[in-house]
Length: 112
Image (cartoon, rainbow, N blue to C red):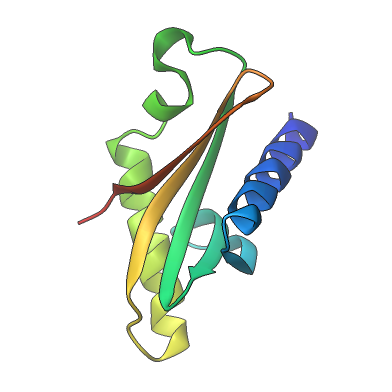
């Protein structure tokens, strides 16, 4: 399971890099939770949640990012930003992997 998660994150990272984003940090952890990828898209700091599901049944990967998970990601992002000493422009994206070949990148997937 952990290996599949790492593979999903690598696929997402490669996909985002192909679209011009650069990696800032992977698997940022704090007491509020974890952020899979922190990327930079020009001046924008992008917090990325990566979700993989073997099929789209029951809503697939997107449905697994529920309100509770979003709150945890927002809290972890606030913690990360507080450590930088400035408030950059930022957004929350999701990279969804349903099955083996389908990658969907949703920009501004959620936020305040």
